[in-house]
Image 1 (cartoon, rainbow, N blue to C red):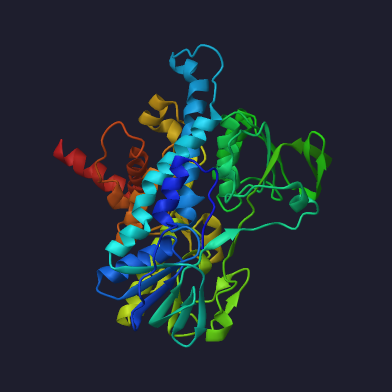
Image 2: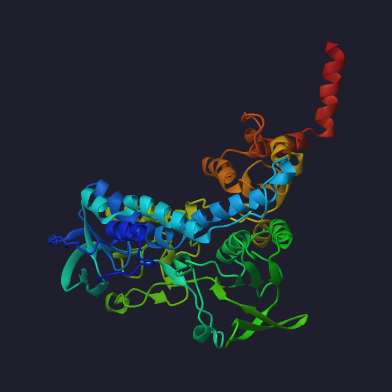
Amino acid sequence: MTVDVRPTDPHNLELVANVHPPDWVAPSPAPRYNLVVIGGGTAGLVTAAGAAGLGARVALVERDLLGGDCLNVGCVPSKCVIRSARVAGELRVASAFGIHVPGPVEVDFGTVMERMRAVRARISLHDSAARFRGLGVDVFLGEGRFTGPGTVAVNGTTLRFRRAVIATGSRAHRPPVPGLAEAGFLTNDSIFELMKRPRRLAVIGAGPIGCELAQAFRRLGSEVTIFHTGSHILNREDADAAEIVQRAFHAEGIRLLFEARLARVDRAADGKVLRAETPRGSEAVTVDEILVGVGRVPNVEGLGLESVGVVYDRHEGVTVDDRLRTSNPMIYAAGDVCLAEKFTHAADFSARTVIQNALFLGRKKLSVLTIPWCTYTDPEIAHVGLSEEEAAERGIRIDTYVRPFAEVDRAVVDGEEDGFVKLHVRRGADRIVGATIVGRHAGEMISEVTLAMTAGVGLGRLASVIHPYPTQAEAIRQVGDMYNRTRLTPRVKRLFAAWLRWTR
């Protein structure tokens, strides 16, 4: 099986040579494997490498590119493009810092994309077939399919296993909008193949993928319009957090059409016409390219799951229990194919859970994991734990503490005052149950809160963590100070005052 990665340039040839080498020779299969892993994305790679490192005999089956979405069409390429876009955005506001850039900022889109391909090829070494062979994993490139109890077929070869793991990931959802398929559209699977910047770009959906790439392409020079069925962007985030990013989008010239119901898409002489109904009336927007970012669906087709009694849903994925075991006790699942949280780091840690449970009869539970996430807009939004709404739904009474970055010295110095640190604790205690950070470096800051939640460190103790001055992460310590001040009740203050009068 060969794969086609466009454009065919030295960087993509290097990528393919690493993660789906055309001259790859499959090994002779072992009589029986401790673990056969179907899918070579993050969940599959972590499972295979971790199990092999513990001494298990492991086979890894991948039909496309090792590294999965994250390396090839997700995290890595998108963050490369976002980095270039951030440079362009900073140059446009450089005069506010006393730096004058002569003339308008010129973006060489071809070079932006070439840099992305070069970085992706470099990183692909970590996920290469040769590396995993060196780790002791038998790598098979081809379609894997369950054929019966304890067997998987790939390229006419039968692999026998004691346990198997389904880690086939997910793909972009294609909405059934009349005329969309005929007009042609991009998803995260194809947008990084572009060689020429679209002058006009429509983005369907205002979730993380849509928002990140909408802002990136706007900063790279495209006219961008977002069509969204909701009333604000990033529906999953706290409304006050999404509002800050939304204001940034307006300031940068991104057009936002909310509560927009796409009726159809037509081809015209000057582009593709999206026709939508909104509360303000009908809209017809002509663009050169359309990016679809309306969620993801699990890859469950063609695996022969019915033949081994694995229950699944085409929309929700493979059904698993809290130990990531499927309805067949010999078969587990990890990553996007079974998780509601479709993040690379969630796939990573679900794989670690599978290793413990599948190989060692462990009882590790997915539900004990504290999984943060970050949307890489500018400013970023990072979150961990419960939101205010989720806490209310669960009947958990909370107290909330907020520190705006406008009151944090380093953020003021950097001109990055939009945003805040918000932490929720159980009422009457300092146990942290959730946090949201909105800011330029939110993704780098959320891990301190995640560590505190994982280790059971309360908000009051975070106030005693000494942070270098000036840093934006000081905002977390300052929120801890806010909590500690609430412990100075009127009675405690009277006692302190009496003591200080007596000791004068």
